[in-house]
Image (cartoon, rainbow, N blue to C red):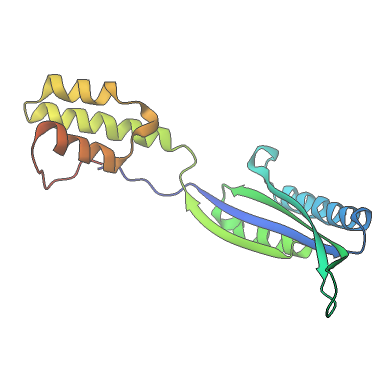
Length: 173
């Protein structure tokens, strides 16, 4: 079993604006998002740990009674994802972003920044466990014939059960 503590937190911040014209909404929203980006960077978040995840411009309609919908303005939604490596700064990053104008905050996730190292260790343990049970050739063939993209702990366990014809109660993850 391979286990690790999360080493990064992922936060999402957004700026949603609504104005009468495309020019007005893009200027206001971009100015505010630039302020949010500066505030986040001032919290010692590296450029590589910030990425845009959404930029969506939509008309906003009015629905007059008995008439056709008419465009009354535009809404712009910009979202960024921020990777925080120092958990002690999460509150400060949120406070800075919202203080600079972010009006949407969500999806706080704690995760592993580089899960590939953990997957490699899980594969290594799966091979060793299969070899210790007398399945040396089929274990290596099974592991190496499968592409890394399709590997996760559940698939390793399932492949052992399917290929070796056993229902093992101990999990290899």
